[in-house]
Image (cartoon, rainbow, N blue to C red):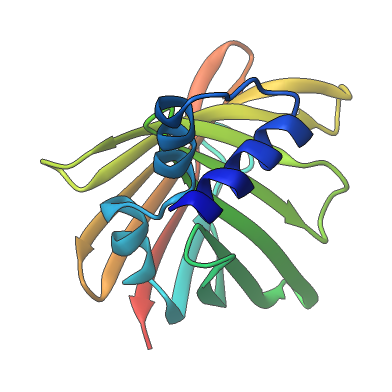
Length: 186
């Protein structure tokens, strides 16, 4: 324990955080130790088929795409990395996301990048254990205006082999469903 305390105090110093007591070091230990939420996320590791529906504007025709997702926990089980590959209208698609459970803030933090843009989508949100649903909100770049716009995501665990993600954007001040992905474990 003394060695761990020394390492934590060194990390705190490096990060510019004052941690001089065992209580402060204990808080840091709680922050860095994978939790039951991290263990739940690890159950999502593996290969998944994605059936994707997209809408470019409210009332626009539905567009469909299939892709594959590979999830894996990284950095000692603290984060989940998801790599997505597919084909959209003859164009190769690649996406990469990270999902974190922030032990101190008790919320999910998510990032997304893909080869259909150059921005980074960031979202944060809560976990509802009763409904097995993450509710995330964040920002993404609107390529038409170059400004950040609101985005919302609802990620539901249906069962061990099925997940549903719904994404919502805003157009002309009105929220609308932009995407729905059904994940099915391979």
